[in-house]
Image (cartoon, rainbow, N blue to C red):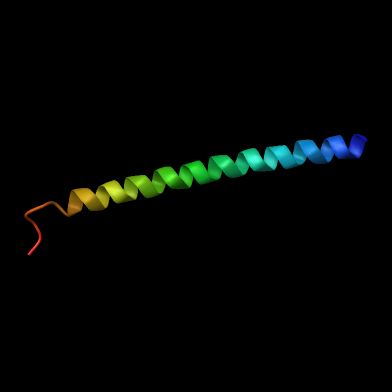
Length: 46
């Protein structure tokens, strides 16, 4: 029983860390997209 609780706690902490990593990556991708939109303004296209 004790091993099951330890495994559950370790697994839960791993999932939480993964969620934070994915959230951070999403924010980075969003910022990159905003930079691209700022760089390509209407009227600049030929």
